[in-house]
Amino acid sequence: MGSVRRGGKLADLVLLAAVVTALGAGCGAPGRQGSEPDGGREHEAPGTERAREGGQTREDGGGRGARAVGVATYNVYLGADLKPLFDAGSRAELVTRAGELYAAMEATDFRERAAALADLLAARAPEVVGLQEVARWERGPAGGELTVRYDFLRLLLDELAARGTPYRAVAANDNFTGRMPVSATEEARFTDRDVIVVRDGPPASRPRTSRAASAAYGAKATLPSRIPGLSFEVPRGWSSVDVTVRGGTFRFATTHLEAFGTPDVRAAQARELAAALAGSPHPVVLTGDFNSRPGDASGAYGILAGAGYADAWTSAGGDPEGGWTAGQSGSLLAGDELSHRIDHVLFEPDGVRAVAADVVGDREADRSAPTGFWPSDHAGVVAELRLGGGR
View 1 (cartoon, helix red, strand yellow):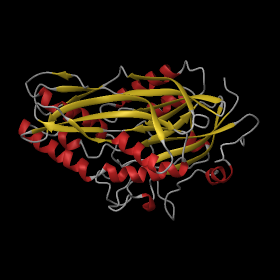
View 2 (spheres, one colour):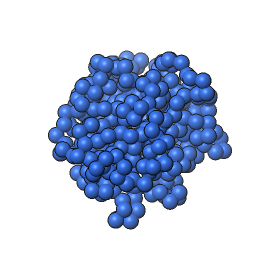
View 3 (cartoon, rainbow, N blue to C red):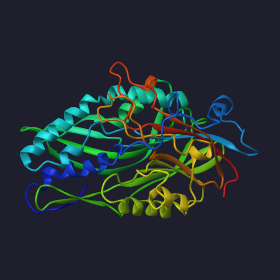
View 4 (tube, helix red, strand yellow):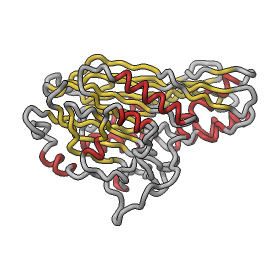
C-alpha cells in the first residue's frame, strides 16, 4: 500500500487517488513516432508467419537441440482514466471524481474485454504470459466489509478455460492498493497487480514451474498533491518463475515500471531489476510494460539493453519504428491511437533466440463484442523463442 506523508486528516481518503494516478498517467500517447506505412502498421516481424506455419508445433526447428517456446506480455488496463483524481482539490471533489472513476471502470466492462483478450491469447497459446494492471476492484458500505466486484485475473482465466486453453497463475506481486469513498455511503478499494500465468492441462504436457519469486523496488515515485501537506509514495515490483518446457529451462519475469514521476525512478527500477535477475542459473526472458521506448538510451530500455538483454521484436526482424503497443484512449472506443512501443519481450541471447514476434490486440477485428472496445489501452506482444545451449 502506498505510504502517506501526513499533513492533514484527508490522507487516508486521497491515498488511492494519488497512487493509482501513477499507473495511468504515463500510459497516454505523447505523439506518434514516424509515419504509418500505407495499408496500416506492420503487426508482425518478418518470419512470424513462417514460425506460425512451421514452428507452432513447438518442435526442434531452430538448430540442433533447440526448443520452441511461446511467450507474451499484455498490459490489460485497469479500466479507467485515473489522472482526474490527481487534480482534486478538496475532499468533496475527490469523492465525486472517485465515483466517476469507478463508473468509468464499469463502463469499459472488463467482463466483455476479458473475452476479447482470451480470444487473442487462445489463438496463439503461448506457454507463459506476463500480465500487468491485473486489477482487483472491491466495493461496500463506508467503514464496512468490502466485496470483490471485479477480479480481472479470475475473469480472464475463466474466459481462457472456456476456450479450451486453460492457464494458471504461478507468480504475482501487488504494486499498490488503497481504499476511499466513492459516494456518501460507499467505499471502494483498488489493487494493482503484475501476474505470470502459464498454460495448464495434463501434467505431462504443461510447463513445469519452480522458484516463483516477487519483490518490491526500493525506488519509488513520490507524488505531490493539490491537497496541502500531502505527498504519496507509490510501490511497484516484479515477479519471476523458472519455467521448464520440453526439457529446456528459462527464468521468466514480468514488471510494470513507473509510469509517472521522474524518469530517474523508472531508471533506478530497471537497474534494480537487472541486478536481481543477474544471478539466474538459466537464461532470462523479461517482459512487461517498461514505459520506455527503444530510443530511450539513458532510460530503462537502454539500461536493460546495456545489461545484455535483446529485444524480441527487432531481433525477429520487426521494424524498429513500428510495433506500437501503447496510446489507445481511456474509453477504448475511439479509433486506433496506438503511437509508441513501450511493451517489450526482452531476452538474454546466451541460450535464447527470437524467431518471430507479433503485436496483438491492435486490429479492428480484435475489438470486443458487442460494444467494440479495444481489448486494452495497450496492445500485447507475442514472441516465438528458441531455447538451446543453456548456460
